[in-house]
Image 1 (cartoon, helix red, strand yellow):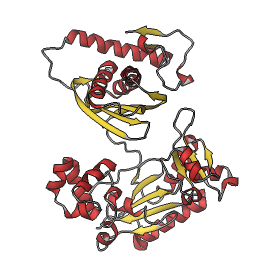
Image 2 (cartoon, one colour):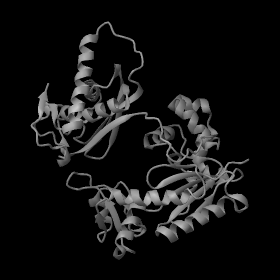
Image 3 (tube, helix red, strand yellow):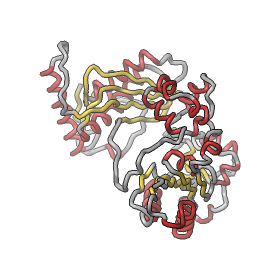
Image 4 (tube, helix red, strand yellow):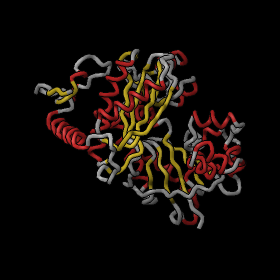
Length: 411
C-alpha cells in the first residue's frame, strides 16, 4: 500500500494566535518579536499583512519597522501558543494516532489506511476546514508519499491551501526548487553545494550519493535520497520523543562581548546549565560545539572532541574556550554565543582511562558537581556559583534564579 503522509503548517502561527486573542488586530500588520531590552529584538512571526509589507522572520525589529512603519510589535505569549498547538493536534488525532510534532506549528500525519475512499487531498481539506472553523486558525497542508516531500508541499500554497506531490509529478514540482528548501540543507550547506554548481534540489538528485557523501558525510547520502523521493522515515506516534543528540545553552548578551575574558565568563556560566542537563539525563559529552553570532549577525560554528567523556561544566567550558581562542579572529564583537555538548553517550558506559589523568581527582570533581546540582535544585541556580561569576558578565538576570539564602562560592 502506498504511504499517505501529510505535513501541516499553521500559517503565521504566533501572529494568528495574537489576532485571535485581540480581534482588533485583525487585518493589521502584526509581528511577534523578542525583547529589545535583552537584545532579542528579532521578528519571530508576522501576519500576512506584515509579510506583504516586507517584514521577514528573523529580521531585526528596527529593520521591520523601517519596512513597515505601521507595524504593531507584540511580545511572545508562549503559554497561549502551546495551548492552541495542543488543540490543533487534538484535531489531527481524530484522523490518526500517528502524529509527529515538528515544533509548535508543524506536524506530520500518517494517514496510510485511514483516509478511505476520499483520499489524501480530501482529508487534508477536511482538516483545514475543521481547524479554521473550530479554532479560527488556518493551516497549509502538503500531501505526499514521504515526509520530506509532504513538508515541501505545505509551503506551496499559503495561507490555507493543500498541495499534493505524487510519484508521477514530484520531479516537475520539487526539482526546480532551491537546494536550501530541502529539509536539513542549511545556508552553509547550500553555499558549499553552489561552489560545485548545485543550486536546486534537482541538482542534488542528479549528483551521486558518493559525491554527496564526500561533501557532507553520511548526511550527504541522506540528502541525495531525500531529493530522489527515497525517504522512508516513519511518522512517529503522539508522545514519542527523539533520542537526545546534543545538549546546549546560548544567550544574546545585554551588550557586545569584546574580549576573550568576557567570552570565558559567559561560556562558564552557560556550561553550568549544560552540565546540569547532562547530569539529569545521565549522559556525557564526547565533544563540544560552539556557535558564535557577531554584531553584524554573521554566524560561525566550530566543534572539537573532548579528551574523554564528561558532564563537568568546567571541562566543557574550558574546551569551548580553547576552541574559541583557536578559531575566532575578533573580526567583529560578539552578540550571541551558544555552547553545546555533542556526541553524547551513556554516562555510565565503560570508558578508556588516560595515563595522564588523575582518576581519583576526577571522581572527586564529579561528586562535587553532583552535590552542587543538588543544592541548586533545592535553593535555586544561584545558590552555588563560581567566584569568577560574581561580577557583571553581560547576561540578562532572571529573578527566578535569586534566592534568600546567601550564595555558596567555589573555585
